[in-house]
Image (cartoon, rainbow over all chains, first blue to last red; front, side, top):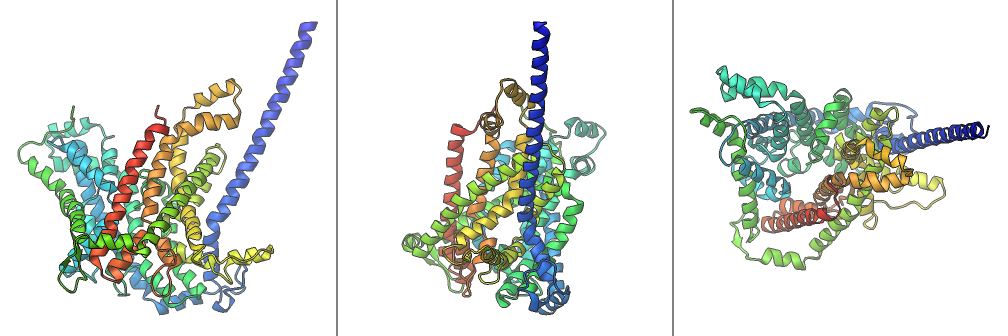
Length: 295
Length: 295
């Protein structure tokens, strides 16, 4: 009798304890969602405000409403009339594309050698390469500028993409890490079948490393597309040669306070990236996450 | 034991060819540039007339130059607020997202948006949000009966720019911390729950020590980024003369080198920046032994 009562008591206590935990969990979930939502508004808000302002009539720019009273594409027309936007878009795209290709090829080649081929001083050389990650790019800008100027390349786009063709510690490290996950047996078997190193690189390693190559490509492309300092140094004023960020900075300086037009310009520069981002989200995030390094 | 394929005969040339761009980049792109920067820093050179030997003059004049002192102070203050800001906020977001709720991928996407967006475009929106009279932030402040703030005045600008920089880096930090959080073995928490630990205790005794490697990594990356901050400073704090209301070291290097063409001085500033970054990295690695927990 006594025993059964105690048992009953314990089980009812257990039930209420479980309910407590469940209530706590639901409350915690609600709180989590609330906090994440508030954060999301802070994250997306500026982008929505950019879109909203860019669609307003210039006279309405201070109207403070989220939905424009009269939605218009007038700002984009003005923008295209004020700046050679087509040139800027093409230039930015062209430079980012060449930079990406250069980095993928040269970093891929070096990463393959560091991951697969055995040779003297391999580890030492790789360590030296890695150590250069610590050197800030600002240290190299002045000599690079003097060098490119002496070569007669100041005022051309070459200084923006040419350095992409001499490899880089970041891309090489990233691809080497990936190449090392590919079993060496594959390469050895191909070797037995008479494949050369070059063929092993092209036929085995590059196709297998597609995810890592995609992540790196996105990372490099973004970095180039968004870069301001380098084009500002080499092409500060030539609107037919320079890139979109420099064009936008000029727009800001020349038309202060004309927010609808400035927002239209900002939108033009991020819209292509965001569109691609929605389709290749995973590669984007991997590209940044693999590294954690942004510059 | 080194593993890998040994190149045979003519393949030696392939190895050299594959490594050639990287070797060229190391020799000329990095080491050459670093030595050139060091060398030029002892000269006075405006690019128009031949360089003149200046000895330590460039460095001595930096010591007595209040503007450079100001930019060092700005950069330091920037780092001291930006680095803890990024770590605390992105760790908090990562903890929320790690609670295994629905819709994680959507939130991840939202928080990641600023990371992929052009800093110039984002800077333009924020300068519109921060605008003194009609900016939405002051409109909101007035709406709730508060005094409007001059966000981009020289007293406030540094703080306002740090907010934008933290806002822009949350997505990146979040990814780093999520990876760290997901690597913590579940049994640790199960064992703690058996012992009756509260969620608060679990955080301080398990979660935080276990992700110290991620915090360490993020602290280094954020510090390096902070010392190289340029884009947001350029867009948000540029004055009509082309200067900045809160110049950072990189902004000052850009100004000295590419607006005033005082190459020697710009190189001396770059050398100072590099020394600071290297010393900080070493300090970080020294401190790492004290607080980073490795399994």
